[in-house]
Length: 93
Image (cartoon, rainbow, N blue to C red; front, side, top):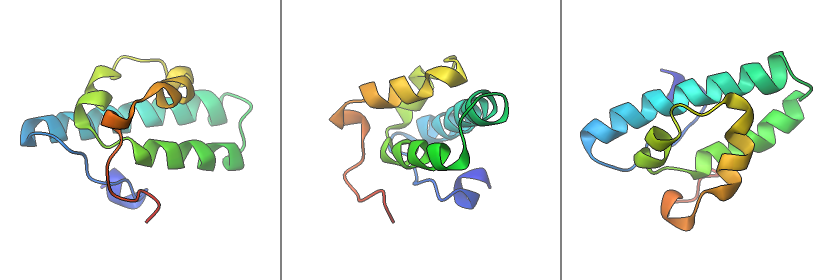
């Protein structure tokens, strides 16, 4: 599974929201990688920093809310995420 492969933490929310949030997160992060790294100017080091920020947002509803966002907007969206969107566990494994 994608979340396990990339060491993404489980999302918080109802069971239904968790599934939807997982799909939304996967799709948005995949779009962001394609736009910023594959087609853009980012290197793997830049991406690794962003990936760590992705891991900090564990509220399923946040990912669902961002499901239609452009991949290039992900860095800004993550910077705007609030404490309510971030989990209480240490996301840095």
